[in-house]
Amino acid sequence: MDRQGMISQLNEVPLWDIVIIGGGATGLGTAVDAASRGYKTLLVEQFDFAKGTSSRSTKLVHGGVRYLAQGNIRLVMDALKERGILLKNAPHITSNFSFVIPAYKWWEKMYYGFGLKIYDIMAGRLSLGSTKIISKKTAQELLPTAETKNLRGGIVYRDGQFDDTRLAINLAQTAEENGATILNYCKVIKLEKQEGIIAGVHILDSITGKEMLIKSTNVINATGVFTDAVLKMDDASQPKLVAASQGVHIVLDKKYFPGNNALMVPRTADGRVLFAVPWHGKVVVGTTDTPVDHTSYEPTALEEEINFILTHINLYLSADISRKDVRSVFVGLRPLVKNTAAKKTSLLPRDHTVVISKSKLVSITGGKWTTYRKMAKDVLDKTIALGQLEKKTCVTEGLKIHGWTDTIERPDDLYYYGSDAAMVKELYKENPAWKESIHPALPYTKAMVIWAVRNEMAMTVEDVMARRTRSILLDAGASIEASPIVAELMANEMRMDESWIREQLNSFISIAKKYTMDDV
Image (tube, rainbow, N blue to C red; front, side, top):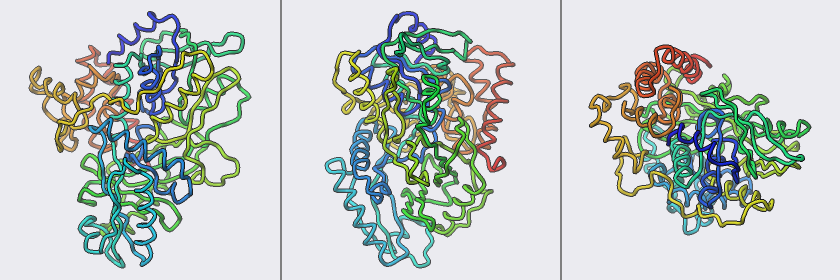
């Protein structure tokens, strides 16, 4: 992907069929769907792709076991189907993964085992494997550092895992390959209307400072937790649609949780769900569900959320994990659909909602990464129903996502690059020094930085450290130490000067500090 080339396309299309506001999971998925149906499609994101919620998930592609317990059968059925489709269409960034529920009470094996058998049945032909009830000995083998006191065995079930931001970048590439124009760092500053009906958007290119009017037959608002801001731009009297909920995760070294199986606690003492999931050589532990009034692109973990995670993970692991063991803290905001009857955000539905304003602005919010494809299909079908587009059939159920391959074997450090891996390795020939690591504690090379700039529209050091690689999540301290090397590589590639480097480092380090325990 070439950003300058994308910008030039803005002048070549006098009228777009669809403009999508928001470059997270839903927006990118909608761009893939729209472009693959043959519509002239433009997506604009005010910062970087997946800058917000979509880069801060628990890294699971799942049906949602707890939604089954809540009785939300339709959501679970949809999610299980979409889980299977995603694993089939993007095997290079997804995994079929074993999750273990340790049982410490005599009834838990049968209770959770029965529930997860239903989970398997609901998945049908897209099931990832059968649930098994296991002995104490097997549970100890699968979870070597699990607390053994009162352990009675457990349940093993299968679910999916993925790299959220790598999927987002691959969706952007897939959309482009199908004819879409995809732009980061382009902010919608005003909605264009004709006789009260949406007719386009005014955008500001943050890189150049240039403002442009983009005319479009349809506009889709897919901005997640920022949905209300766009709705207010359309109609200042619009009531709030989104109730944001904050989810915090901590990242630990793998030594505290060795093995290749995830831990799932379906109900902690206060009724929450807890995961410990191996990911990129680390382990992601979380999450929380805290209502927040203020939405931010860089939300901050609360002290009580960190304490909750540390306290509860120590109940299930033999190791005594403390704050000093945490390599990174990351926070995501869930765009839950507002319900005045619910007192807790944990009780709000995780389903998605499509709202069509009087101006024919189409907004979609809610949902989760696993169901992004269905969300895209639903919002596009409803947009088509407005009558201003030729009806075309969705093709994404069988559409391979950029990078699809069945040839790369694990544990190649370029596995998540899929079919691009060979081209990344070709950069070693251009400059052998690019084969070097950016930091001893991080699994990324200089070539990956160059590739991100040349082919994945990385514009800032943060783009590379947070989303083209996952450095800031794996080890925030190491990412700060590696940032001067990354900034210099990018500056040389982008022909930027020393002042750009200084500005980028100041900006990135101030953000990265929020991912350390020092800032909590």
